[in-house]
Image (cartoon, rainbow, N blue to C red; front, side):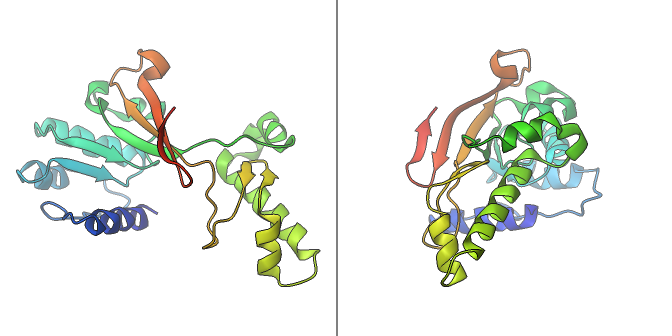
Length: 214
């Protein structure tokens, strides 16, 4: 997941006429706990003024802590891996997260009572709520499409147009993707005692409207 996201960001960045600084994309094995060498390769290169982390929460905190120890003062961005107030629990110093900007899936408006039923038994069901809701919707769309006559792909597209799902209203794009509710764009203040626990989502992006203020 992290690798695929990283290369998607690289591709989009380079399509805009930009190049990656220093060593470019840097991967690491998932058991890594020492990020000092990785951080040094960034902090020691004067051309690197920004970093994008496609890491999960613990790794992202470790990398940021090491960059802080190196005195690096560039800008940090990340995907949904470290997103949320739980990041503060992983940081050696909360202030290190100040101005970190992340993107995270935006919650849709659920239809029906499936989400409420999930919430009532979330501790028993486990898993990640977003995955459960979207899996339920995918199953329902496929099931309804399978009862219709005609080509299954056409049926899925038909059913999946303004489908009132548990994860929100679903409409398939022309390429077969789902636009979904978009992504929140959130920034950390570096102090979890601040408003919204130091995690403010002031903008969001949707495939239909681009970036908007919340």
